[in-house]
Structures are given as C-alpha cells and as structure tokens.
Length: 118
Image (cartoon, one colour):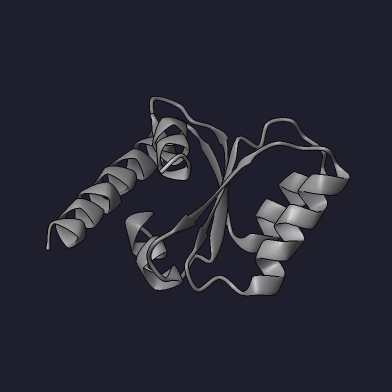
C-alpha cells in the first residue's frame, strides 16, 4: 500500500511541476512538434515526456533522431496514459508526448533525474 501512496505523491509532484513549466517555461505539445524540435538539432530540447501508452514507433523515432543529432535530452515515460497526460497539462484532449525547451520556474528536470536514478 505504501508503494501506491508514494507513486501517487510522485505523480502529483510531477503534475505540479508540469503545470509550472507550462505556465512559466516553453513547451511544445504533441509528437509531431517534439520530432520537429529534435530534428532541428536545436540544443534547446531539455526533456521529452511521453505517456505510458505512447506508440512504440513514436518513442523509437524520438530516440533515433536524438542519436542522429547527438542530442542529449532527458526522456521520461509519464506513468499515466495520454488522456491523463493531457488533463495534467490542462488540456481536454490526449497528449502522447511533449518536449520542454525551457523549464521556467519549474524543477521538473530535477524530478525526472531523480526518477531515472531510482
């Protein structure tokens, strides 16, 4: 039971930081926008967040483009489906993925790093 509680706290922390980055940073929403940003070779892509049900070919596409461009953004699989990710972003539709170009006043990169190191 403690595991479920700790997971919900982590999701709520991530949701809070996601809201902060959406308000004060720069975010591109959608798989196509994320791929364009990654292909552009722009060093500004700091993180790619994708839903747990994001199609495998899209995730592979992100990683392939990143490898080709020698980029180094963080990748994070959000532990919710695309509809819940959309709602977490304050949107009434599904979001399979998004990319963060500027974190603004958010600590989202720190949370992602912490999660990756678990």
